[in-house]
Length: 245
Image 1: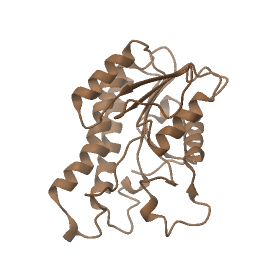
Image 2: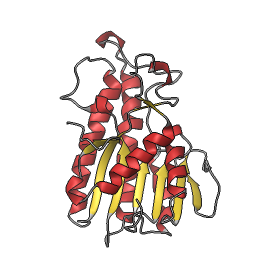
Image 3: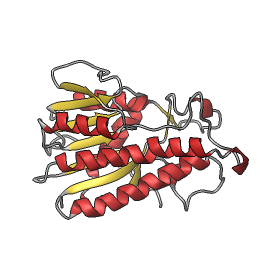
Image 4: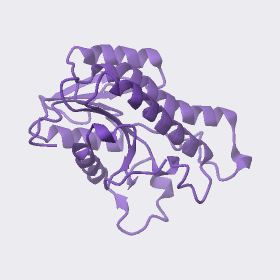
């Protein structure tokens, strides 16, 4: 993302996570970037420097999302918003192996974090994007959210939430393009990244397919650099290939 003025002013939501922090590091290192807003529940930044701005944001709280957008609005327009959040497992949640494992509360929580949260961020932050030139709103999705590519089953809640996210992004992209014709709304598949989200599930990853966060972030930024308005509403992998719906 160098040489064409994109991006100058950036926002990373989930900036203290493994991939989010890598996005911050990659963006700060780029000469053309003037500012990087680091938004997370802690309100802290993973790196320091003159380009860094930080504020708190909890994607499960509509009020928190709105308050963060109001803070960032003071430095709008924004060229790039990256939502680098996601939930696959924690001490109360594990990916389901079969229908017997389904639990209503856990399904709702997965959807809240993986789909509703990013949708609320889109609602609050899409109006802050630049109308005068290329701007991008990108959310970490996952290949397992592809319905047509689902060949082994399992992981009901995560798959369904990411599929829902992709539909929300597609719908938002259509509306957003009516007033922001140069803007791009996309999902990003980072591949399998060596992070807390994937760590319990890395045993069967093929050689050379477990990526560092910095490799994944750099690759996805390169993908975003090559997109244009005709790419909006779609999902792209770290290698630039489109993920089927």
